[in-house]
Length: 498
Image (cartoon, rainbow, N blue to C red; front, side, top):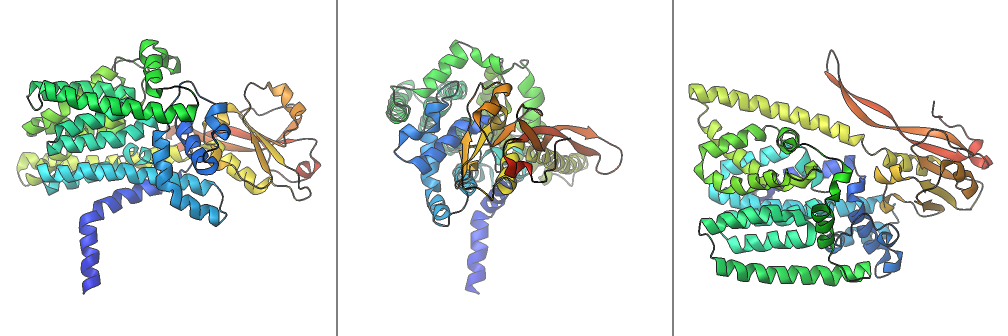
């Protein structure tokens, strides 16, 4: 009888973690590739794991990006993933398995911090609120999909989760330290969360001004010293990355070059999509439990302040989701407890309906995201069918900018006879002069090359009659071209691109 009891104890303690971790892992294995927003950290993790101290071979020295980013997050995740990567290398498995390893390691870190927050929720609001918190996270798409994606926002999210946990626990100085580290090292925009939260703590006399100054000064000096030390070595020049990001986005206001959205966009688009059923519930939770307003107000202020910046993306405010989910979980728990009363019974039926609808929305969003990495699938296909039998020479693949942004990283590259180029700025008419074997390109026709096959990607969702009422509309996104002078390639049968 002992083994079942131990198993039961394990699930009682870690059951919620297993559930959330399983969903996050499912997303990793079903959509393993990464986008341009993740590019720096993905390439940095690859280089740390495969080039080690040979910094001259690192990708960021050739492709530094618009603004520099810190290596601290990449170093942490690489250390966590290194045992798995060691086994992968010993088994001589493709490097794509190492990408899975680093993403799983990142997900483990983020979900561990979410567990810390969840434990504090249980202690302060009870088991039932904790259960609804987990349900809401599980049926939402973005939190568990993004928690394994090496974005600076997600690395900051781990520290924000810790800060929320300490906040609920009453360790307010630890809350400030976590947010300061997140702001200085990973995301300077966390200052917009730190300031309202710190002001609220001062106004409610949760902290004293002098103690806050001492606490913040020490955390600031440590964080700045650490990031300058590490990143000056990695970038091979004196550097504080997040200060450069702050100057670029806030002082120069150049983030708007990547598009702008109206002031209300976070409230009318990003939050509804990320929270789903929790969006109306969190507002109800503020009304039902007076304790919740204390936690929601600084986070809501963070969204309002962030809305003043013209360039907006959902990932910028993902750190607000845990607190909004907490408020929504309080509301859901209250509705569940009063479900036998006439008015509350209607709310309970509406709650169940919205949970099902939210789950359906998550399934639709996942299907769209699954089809949103066309160049990753294109390179994977090329590796399977594009190798040559009659030559031992290298196969040179040129990856254009669009392909590099939509699913390809160094982890996707094969060893053996494959070689890769991401050289930018080449006119289409010059590719034939460069002796590339294959091209991955967004253009259908290129001089000196024949289009061998095309890879479709997500375009839009279309409503239709019948079941299911929606369908995914895909269109060609990436084309694989073969060099016309390579007879071994041209003599094969290819699907073509018509």
